[in-house]
Structure formats: C-alpha cells, structure tokens
Image 1 (spheres, helix red, strand yellow):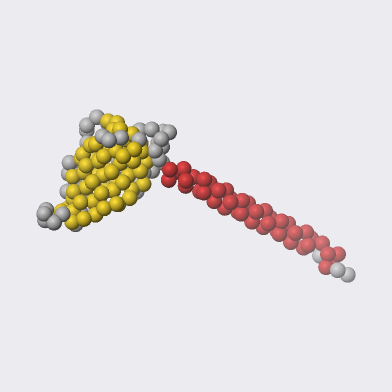
Image 2 (tube, rainbow, N blue to C red):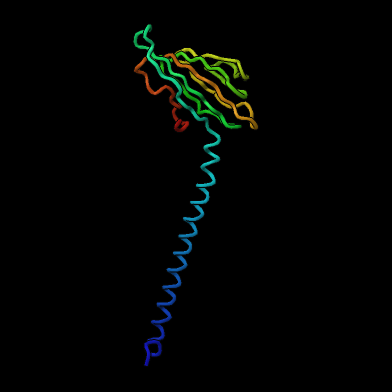
Length: 165
C-alpha cells in the first residue's frame, strides 16, 4: 500500500501547508518587485527636480591671506530647485546666469527672476531661501563664484529639516 491510502489526512495537510507557503512566497516576491519598480521610476523623477552642482575652479588667493576663490556651476533641469540653504559664514558669492531664468530670494528681500547675462550677489551670512529654475519647460544654469575663508567647509548647507543637499 502506498502512503496516501494509509495517511490520507497527512498528505492533504502537507499539500495545504505547501500551497500556503507558495502563496506567501509569491506575495513576498510580488511585493519586492513592486517596491523595486516604484524605486526605479521614482528616483529619476526626484533627481530631475534637484540642481546639479559642479566645482570648476578652486584656488587660494595669494594676495588675500587665508582666502580662496571657488567657482561652481549650478545646473537646474526644468522645474528644478535647490533646498533652502546657507553658505559658509565667510562666503561672499557672485552669481551669473549662464542659461535660462533663475528665481532667487536672499534673506527677506523679495524673490526676483534673473535672465541670461544678469547677476546677483550674496553677502556673508546670507540665507538663500529660494534658488530655482523659473521655467518648468527649459533648463537653467548659473556660475557662482565664492570668495571664502580657505578653511570654511562645506560651502553650502541645507536648512535643518529640509533634507540633504
């Protein structure tokens, strides 16, 4: 006689347990797949809404002891913005719009839109409340030149509670 005819309940019990385990495994695999797909699709979108900063020049100023000049390009995809932030406390910043239009607000000044060829500056200790691409259709970029104490780092820090920059 085979085992099924002697122990019929055991065989069906093992079958039910195996079926339940398989269901849990399939559900778990499906959940992992859904999370992976959401992450892959969400990451590019989130990255596209943030600026990209690239240091293009850094040099000690030989005639100004303890100071250096740092130049960065800030590239904004359409609709992108920076987090509200502050720069190193010694930083004097000159910003020149290279392409597109940039909306900026420093301290309690009114927000202003700057076009290609226009510039603005930030004095040491300023709070940069708004820095963003003013267009939802076209990219924008600017050149920011910092004159800063040689030992000041980082150049930019997001406001507390706004995430990382």
